[in-house]
Image 1 (cartoon, rainbow, N blue to C red):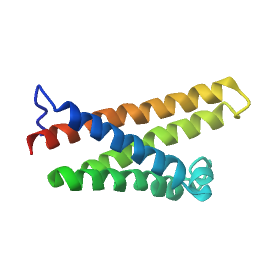
Image 2: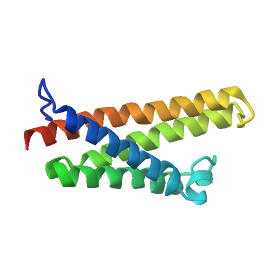
Image 3: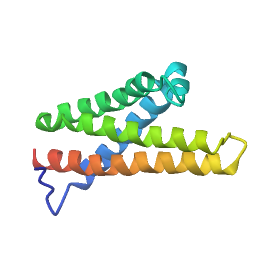
Length: 135
């Protein structure tokens, strides 16, 4: 079980939050290849590109925990699975509704996708900050 104390260092939480924002920007935008971006949205053959993309997120999360709290490195796998599920749900919803960037609903869905990723990161940042605060 992960022990979250009642008080966590503000500096640790701020640092962990920034680390996860940077991780997200790198993995979701700078390091996501065209193969990942287009492949994960296909109706068939989507699993490998999605796994590669979500795996990048998971690996980067694992590195953050490896540096601060090695016993929690397994949370990289949790991040990978959550990220993959969120992205797949967005892809399926976008395709079913035939949404394009010219439609407002596309951007609502994109915003929901990003919000869910950031909520995941807030939870992970709390855990990372709690682990760092104890050190």
